[in-house]
Length: 141
Image 1 (cartoon, rainbow, N blue to C red):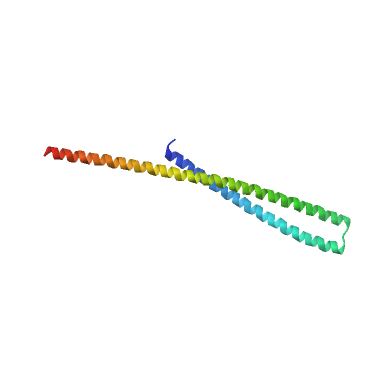
Image 2: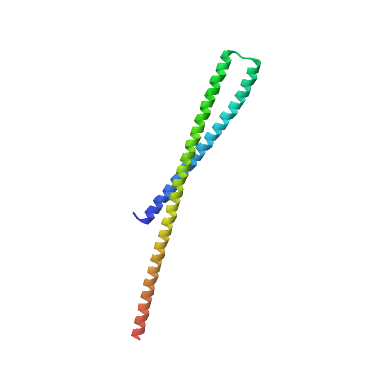
C-alpha cells in the first residue's frame, strides 16, 4: 500500500472517529440531562411525600410512594450507569482519535520528506543536464 493511500485511509479513520466522538458526546449530554430530570423529579416527589406524610396518609398511599421512589432510584442508577459507560466510550474513542491524528501527522511528515527528496533529485538531474550542456558547448568552441 502506498503512503498516499495509507494517509488517506488514516484521514478517513480520523473523520469516522470524530463523528463517533460527536455521537457519544450527544448521547452523554442527553443522558446527563435525563439524570438531572430524574433528580429534580425525585426532589419534588420527596417534598410532596413529606408534606403528605405530615398530613397523614394511608398504608396504600405510603406503599405507592415507596414503589415510586424505588423506581426513581433504579432509573437514577441506570442513568448513572449509562453516563459512566458513555464517558468510558468517549475516553476510548478520544484516545484512538489522538493516535490516528499522530499517525496522520507522521505520514504527512514522511510524505513531505519524500517530496523534498524527489524535488532535490530532480533539481540535481536538471543541474547535471545543464552542466553537461554547458560542458558540450564549451568543448565545441
